[in-house]
Image (cartoon, rainbow over the protein chains, first blue to last red):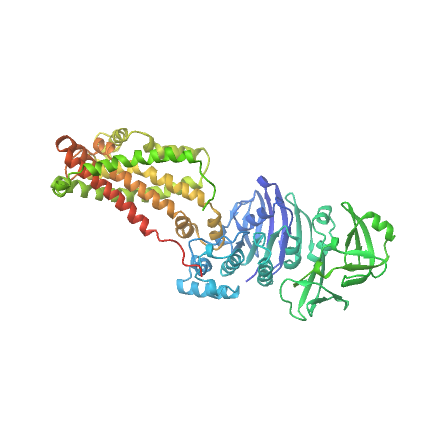
Amino acid sequence: MTLPLHLRVGVDARDVDVDLTVAAGETLALLGPNGAGKSTVLAAAAGLVTPDSGTVRLGDRTLSDATTHAWVPPHRRGIALLAQDARLFPHLSALDNVAFGPTASGEGRAAARERAAHWLAEVGMTAYERRRPRELSGGQAQRVAIARALATEPDVLLVDEPLAALDVESAPDVRDLLRRVTHDRTTVLVTHDVLDAALLADRVAVMHEGRVVEEGETGRVLSRPTSDFGARFAGLNLVRGVASAGDLRMPDGRLLHGIAETHLVDGAPASAVVSPSAVSVHLEPPHGSPRNSLDATVTDLEPHGQLVRVRTDLLSADITPPAVADLGLRRGSAVVLSVKATEVHLHPA
Amino acid sequence: MTSLALPRWLLVPAALGTLFVGLPVVAMALSVDWGSFGSLVTSDASTDALLLSLRTAAVSTMLCLLLGIPLAVVLARTSGTAATLLRSVVLVPLVIPPVVGGIALLQAFGRRGLLGSTLEVAGLQVAFSTTAVVIAQTFVAMPFLVLSLEGALRTAGTRFEEVAATLGAAPTTVFRRVTLPLALPGLVSGTILAFARCLGEFGATITFAGSLQGTTRTLPLEIYLQRESDPRAAVALSLVLVAVAVLVIGLTRARREPVGGVVS
């Protein structure tokens, strides 16, 4: 079962005050730098921190209400928390870690182990069920932690920087697993990595100094942030389409060549993430190696730190002010965007 | 393994320290009259004292666990003035001389003590009974357990407990399945310390419980008594006490199997 989560909480000690709603089955990313108060919001939802004001509601249950002092303790909330470090119980095997939740909620030992075995299989860790946590790599431990959280069949999944502690080799696989398991679950995902938000979230809320400064549909927030802070922090090109022979077929039929971190199934939805700084702007098709050379129309020009962000109907590009002047760019200019295939990161979506 | 070298001069005082502790025990072992060792340690008075010591120390250690574990958890998971005050109270037996502890126990549980008349009405006369021995031992030994376990609990932190709660575990389940197992090394070493302290308890026992053969005369009391009449017996019994202590530590260590299996 999956339920909508409504958080309207203030935590004075951390100067956090937010109002967020996550629809049933939706994944909301809380994006922001370290210290923005993202983890505090999760702790308030899980019941590990008592909010000084506001309410936490799950479906039609009130989990906490600062005015009436209503309070549901963490173990009765049906909200599972996945932390940055897997936090597997060091004294239990992988299987017993996953069986912990079911036994704690009163299931018999045999049934709990059966359920645990099922979830370990779901995350592809059956072969490691007898291992102790210290015998697992970071990525393996995180997989077991995901299975452990899911084995409790939570109504809401809270995910706190799940990939931050992983090395670059294991992060894509765990991200892919998270994408699968958060797909139809009410999820709040805390991250400071725009890529995680781009690939996992339906909606993004950007947090800064304890407040939500921008909230909206993921593609919109990442490509066209309306707040200053959102613009500084986000600003990734996210292009959705379908996989086609290892590349991305965009909705207009053109191909975007890129590098896939995990295997892409032909015809399946996929997305490409491109940093604006990797996109260059030309008036004529450039000579040389870039495999992606795409016609586009400039829709906007705006300052972005020392650079100018050139927005087009396709991708945004960050270039220097002299380059803008040399090219004579203005709204409506017809340009050719080029980007190396190695700068286009393709993911299943 | 660390490859960082120790300053070499440290080895000299470290060796001196080892000698300082080891030499007296070795000297004692060397001076034992092995010919009459058997008859010395198996006399009625000696076996009575040894059995009484083992029995009371075992019961006292259980009491320490029963009262000390909850105390350690409360201390480890609370902060503030009240917690600081509580910690000071719990640690009092550690810093006062055992004889003073015995006198304090008399004032509390003795016949004319604070609770003496209440206990008497209930048909319990505590002072100068085996019960008094157990009370005295528990009194002096509990702080060792509490300190050791509290340290382990603080080191373990609450991270795993929080995860357990979000997985649906009620507080008692968290305590039983996460808090205690994670603090097990501290609990084991605390229990060993407490047991050793119970076994060696002298001052509070002789003050509060007296020295009646078979009832309150534990092995340390017997050794002290024998020292006057038969020094050879005192040395032999001392060695028995050392052997029992070493045996207990050895057994407990051996039972702590290495966690986890083989990495393939």
